[in-house]
Length: 168
Image 1 (cartoon, rainbow, N blue to C red):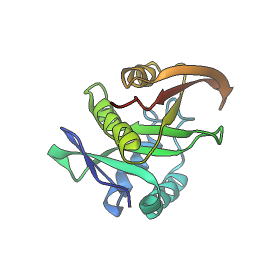
Image 2: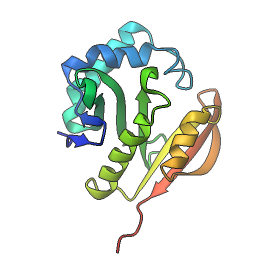
Image 3: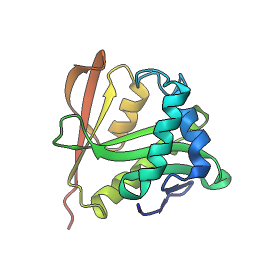
């Protein structure tokens, strides 16, 4: 079971059945999926959301809820193997209803800190389309640095990386 996390405005916990509709909505929303290969068909989205919920106890994945409206899941953050099979990737999706409000920054920073302080990660990467300027700005505000670009999924991708800051 992943640790429940909290930030000023967010509660982050393992995805539950109550999150199913919002998780499906994230995967079918054309705005959310603009740089993620487009909306996923409903049947696939439901199957994927059900899998995320059933495996959440054994994976580093958090459903993000606003404390002011805790029942509604407004995002998903995941740490898992990257395509290069060497690194772990920090990935996220958020509802357009919270874009531009600093919610993603706050929630992703909470998970990033937890990954370094409690999960033992010393390096994480994130991959985003070069055209996804909002995501790139978020990654850079988190302290991630562009490491390389490559062509994948039919578009130019930028791989960002961050290393654990030395303590003491």
